[in-house]
Length: 420
Image (cartoon, rainbow, N blue to C red; front, side, top):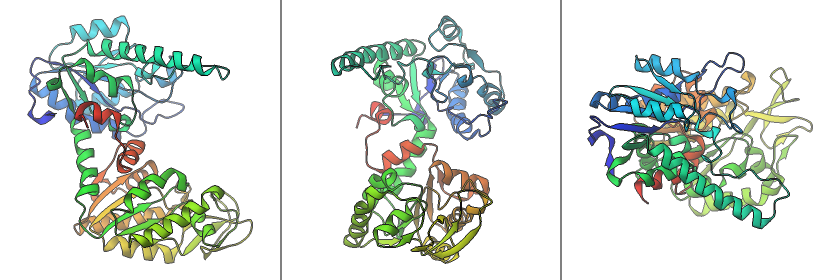
């Protein structure tokens, strides 16, 4: 597999799949978080420095056909600021403008193509009515696969080299991630710096973790994290559980959880995880106390109780002081830390203390030599909100992709280049 740092792009046109799926202000359409744009800059600059030209393709949101609110135009000024140069824009990734502008692109120039998801062929999912028969679905899927290949082939025709630097979409079998590499020679496809750093960070945690290794899993549902939890039970020394899924575990153990979030159909699963942790000699840490509210609002009345003694009509929305102290102590004694998911309803200030405390504890442990990997929207938001992004070892840009990789799944966008 070719490595980007060893490749000379002089005189080459390079089409790069980036992940510019960034949040926009709903009124002004201004980019509100440019993390993903900044993540792509080293790869773009390497190609330009070598004397190559860059064609960028990305998606934004989940459009159904061409929808102006999902245009990549708002990305342009941010991208130009970080590159310190003018960036060209083609208003249709497969249209005449893209074809002509790609053909005319000179060394040292950058062209951004409009949202690739304006074409359903990118995702490869046929739009079918609910009344479609199995035979109609089968035929439509086959036809869409052909169209997806056509899309990938046309985009590939714009350039001589393909670089995938969009880790956030690596778990999707899309045209611009998993299909397009087929149309380039093997020595002309590679990952960008961002994907390489993502894979290095995750492989270090999965395969070369220093001990004690602590995984912190938060979020709303056990069902969302079950596969990564099961995979991690074979690897970690400590597993910390927080967030809404706490209460499924607590109810499974016979505790009283009031109106707290609970997956009633996952109680047996929670008990199996507890048993498996014992079998694997993994220290499983559940919250011991809970910050409860009488309604799901930031201005709610609050009360702290034991986690298994939440009053009727109250709901647990964050971990409380005893749990914060216990979790912080475990994190402080760790050499490898993986964090995915908040400890409470982080978006409400009143219930963000537990998540913030975990973020700071991880930063402190990292300062003392631990390797820390952060992934998942709220976990990353907590790190950024507290100005700790440069105080942890690695902040992943791919929520779903990171989860699937850590679950042990093969990611189509990775396999297409790495071949495994």
